[in-house]
Amino acid sequence: MAAGQRHQVVTVDAPEVAGSIANETARKACVVLPASYASARARRYPVIYDFPGWGETGGPLPWLLGLLRAEDASGGAGIWASYAADWSPDPSARRGFVWPVDPATGRVRPRVLARWRAHGPQAWLTDPRRAAAIQAAFAGRIYLDAGANDEFSLHETTLAFSRALARAGVTHRFETVPGGHMDRIPALIGPPLRFCLERLAAAR
Image (tube, rainbow, N blue to C red; front, side, top):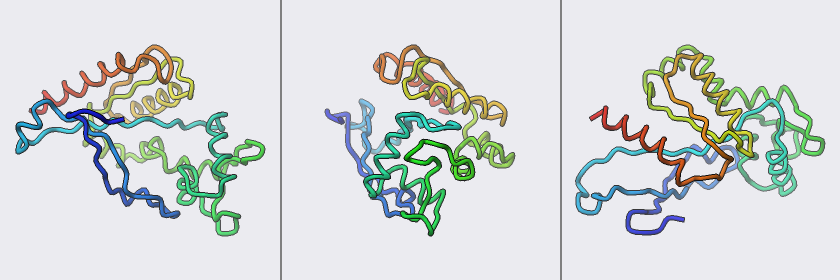
């Protein structure tokens, strides 16, 4: 929850998230402002974006399968329905798309899963021209970390993405941090924040 003078909730219109099922495009985000922001409103400040991760596997993790089953049963819009509508549409299917796994049995549908993987960032890195563009734009500016005991298996998937970046020649930093997904969050913000500040200082 954003609270206090240096925290503001802003609404960002993101038409890209509408997808094929007309998701709400007005999304709220919490902005943490620098201490001098109130007294120097004309000054331009750099921005640090913090993205939480999602995993990519060869099979459905139990918690992911549970979410998918809930969305399938509800019949409404949701994060997985949004992906499926754009990544694996099928006019003959009950909802106009197919899931990458069978919600009832949890069995993977390899052809559908391959269509989903084609939209993931690891697939982008297999295109030499796209990988070169990513390196040119983000070289040394990508920081990844994941808990060694992450309950959502994000350590394995983040490590796999780091290796894909390395194979593509994209300079980045990956850190394995102690604990699970929600452990020691205040203490863990230090390393990525220092990484960002070092890059900002070098760019001045």
